[in-house]
Length: 200
Image (cartoon, rainbow, N blue to C red; front, side):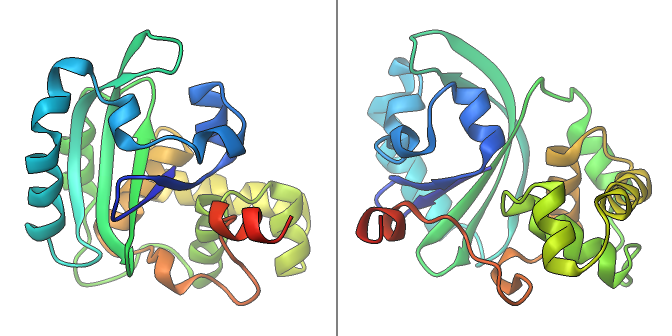
């Protein structure tokens, strides 16, 4: 999961994104979307960005699309990319699923439940905390439950959503309205790079 500002700068990333990009958090926060966009697409990136920002309602999740990530080491990696504009004012969310799920869009469509929640309140709390980069132990401490209970909630969540992994589960939950990252549980905050730099 990566968070970008209006200027296409990365301002936060969860630990999975650091593993995927093979960069520490502080190095990711020095990158812009331009840096991971294939060189042949960069000339049209300004127009694509304007279309992304203006063409969607705040919080609307874009269906997964295949995207080639231009990795910092120069290699290219194909991923499934889900994104949402303004999940917070001036903050845009990208969820990278690797390896890509070829039928991700179909699975998202099959699991949409527009009029009711399939997850319990506790399952939504756990998934929100996972999406914000917390470990199982951290989630257990914040919710006053055991790490084993956290694992049980995650297993039940992924099963109910028909998700193949946590990132896929977050994408489905955002698409279904099960998850709204602007309303995280009390005491939870993103590891925003700008705050980290001003408060070492």
